[in-house]
Length: 101
Image (cartoon, rainbow, N blue to C red):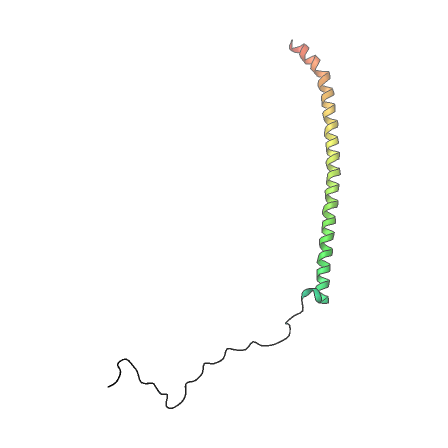
């Protein structure tokens, strides 16, 4: 009498089972590209960008200094004008108080 639940082994036409395929192997190769700091072309580009940044920084600083001198001249002009207005006010205020009173 056969044991319940046990299945007969399934044959594949007399052949053994195939083994699963192996994982693909990585391609062994050299480095794809050299880093940018090792190639002459990229070094020249980096130098040009650095020089342009330095020139721009110097231009901004020079412009700020010229703006500060312009600001000092404007401030001096305003102070001169305020001094003239104070002198005029001192001359006019006694006459204005006499007219009011």
